[in-house]
Image (tube, rainbow, N blue to C red):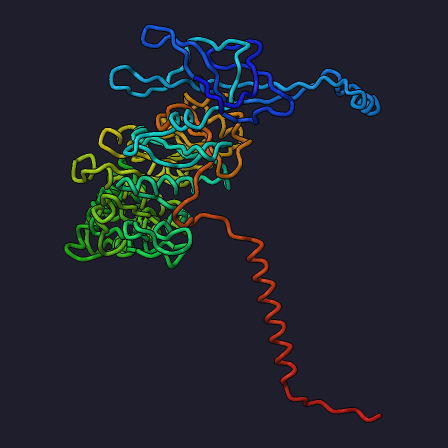
Length: 537
């Protein structure tokens, strides 16, 4: 089962188990950390022992010498090297990933974990490309191409779209590339025909309709940006922008009280608000109009209890009026949910409370439309800065519905993609429902612990690799992949909105502007007529 082209890089030594093995290598030609290896082993398959190709990954490489120890002084080391009596040796530790088994009936491919340990003395080879491609490929209908193997850029990695049915978390510290990675995933899902809704607090995704070079791509018409009047918008020229509004007149008295924060037990205050709203009759009104009503209840009620309660409710309604999200008409959820379409909700520049209310309104309407069968296609909800919407401590407008979607949404076809740099700040109920995770560079111990608690598939060894990942590199675990895989995220086809500014370039532009202004001042001074006097000697 080993071809002539397979490169031998070591021999299995010491103790080996079904999960790992050690190997010795040449000091001049050993596999690097995270390289993929292949060893032959005998496994029981379909009732008989067969030789299989076991795939493994290098987790640790050590070069050592007993003679060249730290206790030996510098001069002695030089004499040892001149005499060429050093005892250099290299060994490594590899984690077993599994082997591919084709079932006799139909030839269905499955990745199985070995039941038998590999044998010391057996050769270790660099894993051949065909084996890796078979391991990390997926069907054309189900596969989402998100990157290539770390150390093996000739092997593309596809994750399973079906695996997203159990929700996904993309986790990384700032600058590691989580939003870029999410953009790649969104591109793949859109090509498959997905309905995608993005809650975007920092305008990271508003440029999805543009290609990486700045033009339009073939699906640009399928990307729409919705922006509330209170949002500032980090980018102005983003293409297809539509207003997102919520009509205050369409809210019931209970909804107004709930949004304002008036407790259910405050019956008199809630009754006062209801009576004030009823007094508008068929008028179009705003939160500011409701504030005026409550400030002067004498015009619409003679009940002293209601009048006193109206004064008490004022502080809550004044707070509600500061949300500044309400308009005269409401944007229908049918405008947002469309097949093979991305709807980006641009929340940039909004206060957290306002942002959360808009998010909760959209999430509730989405849940209602899908769960009641009013919208008949699966919906993928991407929540950037998820810790702001489902905080670990306290609640927000959107935390209840987000947790509900995390627990129940998959039954109806609503799937979450939570993105955060602070997993320790997300409600554990929502994070633990994400059965798949794409995890990039992460150095904070609290966040690493949160990842470990939320993922049964994240081993201590994999966690230990997180600080060593470069920007754009990730570990993928869970139901979207057959085995944990380390990838380099592929290049995006669409333009990124969340990248950092080019600081050096901006500083240079500032210098050029100042220098140009200085030269203009000098030129202007030279053009001025001389008005002084020449002194006589």
